[in-house]
Amino acid sequence: MTIKKSYLFLFIALIGIYSCRSGRKSGADFVIVTILPQQYFAERIVGGKFNIVCMVPSGNNPESYEPVPSQLMKLSDCKAYFRIGYIGFELAWMDKLKEANPNMQLFNTSDGIQLLKSDHAHVLPEGAETDSDHSSIDPHTWSSPKNAAVIVKNMLDAFIKLDPSNESYYQKNGRELLAEIHQTDSLLRDVFSKTKTKAFVIYHPSLTYLAHDYGLTQIAVEHGGKEPSPTQLKNLIDEVRNMHIHVIFIQKEFDKRNVEIIAGETGCKPVQINPLGYDWKTEMLNIAQALYAE
Image (tube, rainbow, N blue to C red; front, side):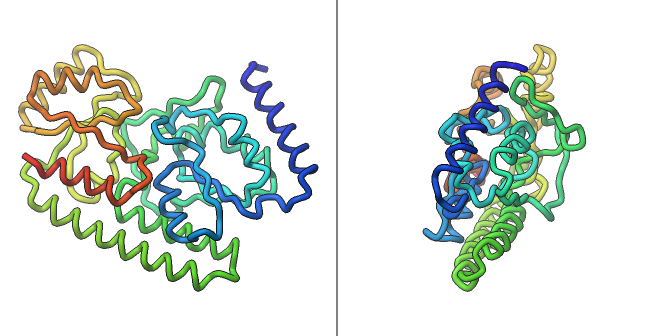
């Protein structure tokens, strides 16, 4: 047994002791989500009727993030966990989190989404068991309005199940949020219809669903979760030049060195984006505006 696993089992044992001694109803106020966009959607639906806790903090990579003890302790108060689907953190930790609180209800907020495959590798923590059935699924389902609407509907149904006495309140908030998502979709369609170059470069392929839904071409710097070889980098630079691509996206969670090389060789403008940011609508519009700008 590794040291990390030994600590994990100790934390789980402490959680059980804390839960038994607290004298409170387990999970009466807390719902946990994996990423910040989920927190944005959830808080818009529930107002202040649930305390929404995000597992992966801002600036961290949800492919390889490991929870800290204070987060594991919150599981004793967690009524439900809303997973985003098949992101690395969930593949590595979900069974352990469920073990920490067997009464916690589990909802997959990406249920019903047409899942896409991509050249994407889950970078899991050391010793984690991989899920071969889902290893090639692109987990970034929230990166398009079409999918965001499905995620919100799944969340809405889940909150009504958890708290049926406030159904009308959740339904009203859900309708307003869905209207905002549909408006965002209209704005994106308008911007992309005027965008001359329909292709973009991105370090980590996190916009697969956005590209699919709006007829764009996503070209990733990463290959199978690894840095490109010198040959791959040269071929990528040639491709960028031939396709007259003008923007290359980078997220703050990833190394900028290869992005800077490509930008220097091709004249592409490096643009930092944050698909994992809390304000989902603003992040989507920022991406569209960067592609539109010549």
